Image 1: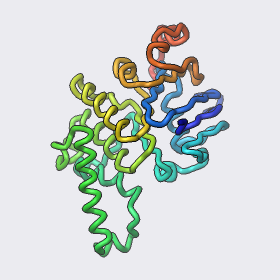
Image 2: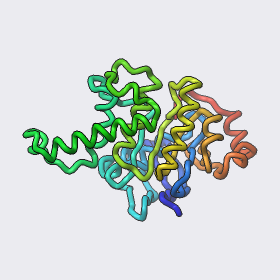
Image 3: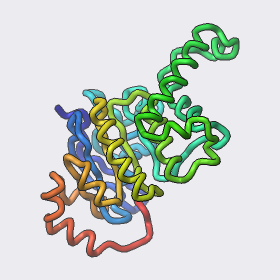
Length: 257
């Protein structure tokens, strides 16, 4: 069943067309990768899917509801969460507390209840703390729960951000360069984490340059080049596609998009 339908999405910045008439589906219970050379428009497309950029044209339908025009917070509440190329943790908070921040998107308490420490707010805090611990175990980094984010290694920071995104309770998780900064051991653990996330009922879309990881975990791959979709299909087909091979062999530029 198609959980996300992207139809003819176009995004321009002045005279530059960053995403050009892109369409694809993401089916529930799968891991889909979005790849392409630097400057292909991958992160711009992620922004268009999650409300950080509004497409100039096209449609993004998630679970039957149109997302175009919604604010990022409303997209999260609809069940779509994402991470970013550059980690955005609160350095003064611990790893566990950063994950708890993600949980706030689902909490019902009001400002007064939180300020007065009413029983309802205290109960939600306990639940949020327990959920943060569970998610850090799922990611495989529970031993970092009480470490301030400022003291976390780069790879662990990225994994904490994934756990924080999961804390919003998404049906669809979009990961922007999740393997960036991870060493070989952490990358292998990330593969298992992605499988566990999928097996927990969460559909995953990843933008990633680590081709070994992409080919291992993906059910399907979409390839962008200069903003346009040039190929889509299972990993074995993508590896042999002449247009994909030509795009990567001709890769140039410094824009990590």
